Image (cartoon, rainbow, N blue to C red):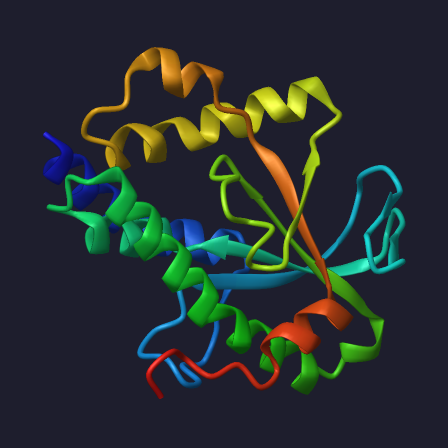
Length: 191
C-alpha cells in the first residue's frame, strides 16, 4: 500500500513543485541536495536568535523544504528508526553547504537574514545549527500537523497513532551568519 501511495505522490510532486515556486539546489560536494528552496518574506512574530540576529515580519529568508518523495524513497526498506534518523541527519548535514553557497551567490544575499523550515523531526536539529521555535498560531500549527501526517505515516513502519498524535511541528531557524560559519567550508567525514 505504501508503495502505491508513494508512486501517486511521485506523480503529483512536480505539480506541487511548480505551484510552490521551489528551486532545486545545484549539487555541490554531494550527489544530490535533499532541499528544495525559495526566497520568502517572513510573516511571523519577531524572533531573536542566539547569535543576536533579529528576524522581523517581512524580513527575507530562504525557506527550505525537504524533498519528501525522494527522502521516502531513500528510506524505503529501512526498518530501524535509528538508521532512518541517522540518514536524515546526514542528508540535511550534507545539503546545508549547498544552501550556504546559494545564499552567498544570490543577488539578494545582503537582504537574506537566515533560513527557515518547518518540521516535526526536532531531535538533533540543534546539532545541525538550527534553533527550534514553537509555532505560536494554533491554526497554522494544526494545518502543518495535518500536512505532515502523510509523511509521518509513510515514513514509519511501527509508529503508533499515539506517538504521531503527540508530535508537534516547529519552526527551524538559522541565521545566515551561523550557516556560513558552520557550512561554508564544510568537509564531509572521510574526505
